[in-house]
Image (cartoon, rainbow, N blue to C red):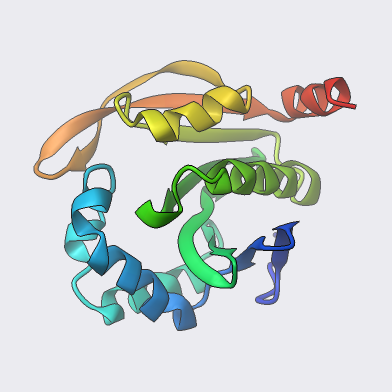
Amino acid sequence: MISYKAETILTIAPDLYLRVATPDDAPALFNIINSQRPYLREWLPFVDFTRQVSDTAFYLQSIVNSTSDKVFVIVFEDCVCGLIGFKGIEYFNRRVEIGYWLSDHQQGKGIMFRSCIRLLQYAFEGLNMNRIQLKVAPKNYKSRNIPIKLGFTLEGTEREGELLNGHYHDLEVYSLLKKEWLAQKQDNL
């Protein structure tokens, strides 16, 4: 079993890092969700179920106690601006899914792209994962550009894979293998 320390910080740049999320982050995250509901609810099914700070705190507490999920807050210029993390870690098969969201006000700065690179590095090199999967809605162009830019392979479509705003939506499934990650790193030397 892989253990995490609450103080885990994944540095990206002097003004950008990932820190393991705790229930203490609930007010900052809830404020983003609550002030940006129309923007976030377009692609995120949890937004409508997040009605008060305690809903966010409950979720974060459940992650703290989880052995299969781990979430990091994205901190840019000393402000929490989103979440990124691992969903459904399979230790035996060494595979995991990544999920993420970012405040509308921080879009277009490369924050999520750089956060994904750092999380991939942590997963492949720190946790020794072999496969990382990412699912995105086909029309969520900002989000789906990330796995494409990172060299993920589109494996197919999970038909009606997510219930969002009362309707089922397809999800594109992307994956990246450790050997592909290592080859990309070698090519960039």
